[in-house]
Length: 161
View 1 (tube, rainbow, N blue to C red):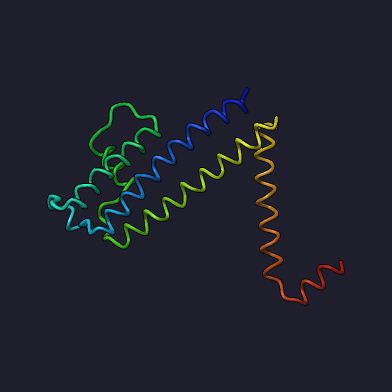
View 2 (cartoon, rainbow, N blue to C red):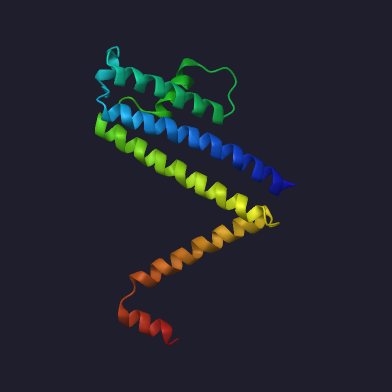
């Protein structure tokens, strides 16, 4: 039953993540198109098409943040925190663009992980099995990294144990 619930919520999560990636792509395009950003610029009203679109996307991304967390009534401070979490408008163009690219990469990793969970769980495995497989994979990655960092002499000594 839990596996079915995780599969269902993963499908929903993938849809939300893809929507977020679409908005992030649009925000990156607005920055590339010359949207005015930064701590000083945010004090002035947006007048260019790119800046107005970026403002709109900030609101949409902020609503995604609000929707992903259970809130009661939001105070102005909580709403501003959600907006700043979604798209920090104090960052200058290149830094904001970099932030969005990293955020998009993180969303893609979330989608990959959810797809892996769906594939794994749909074969009759349990959630505990999935977690164990992910932890095993992480341990293996750490071991591989340790091997990569060894000198040839250290590797030779390890193989001869």
